[in-house]
Length: 251
Image (cartoon, rainbow, N blue to C red):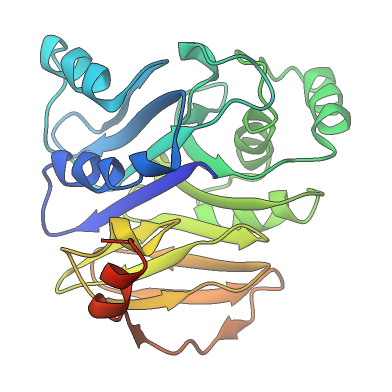
């Protein structure tokens, strides 16, 4: 299972997300990457590596990227569609490189969707099934990210745990799941998304677990959850049992 991390909130240091992603290395992976919105530059930066997180950090040190930004998304990938090369690593973007997404799961009807999108002049840069999602969201985006994500997911067959950010709706992360685990950690003035509780511990123990075909919308100060019909869902905040996590090797 690939690893997902997302962060939005008061702390702008993107290394917080990278440290959380390291906690998911035990699952194994062949590539990794991240994307984040720079408030200073007013754009999304992304960096990928078909290698370990340590190599990704070396790339970051050599780059001229700012180290501050929010929201941010991170990913460890096991290759399925497309070999483990930089271009196939997550996050993936749309044609304009304004919408970025990380995804766990398999999009079963991606070939059909990809051919349809190509006929609409969408340009693909990877061999992955995941990239179809970014172009679908681009197709439906009219200023509101969660609305576009929901419209896209209604066309998708398969499994997904995903986190999405957009340059043109940058004060939020949109997350969704279907048969791929995803939870939201609730901190003080911050939220962290992960596919595994181990990435969240150290930031907060308070979490909500998304159910299948639910969508979460996180802003720096609040969050809500809906279904694919945009009906709000009441979610119970739970607390991760640290002692149990240690016993089962999560910590």
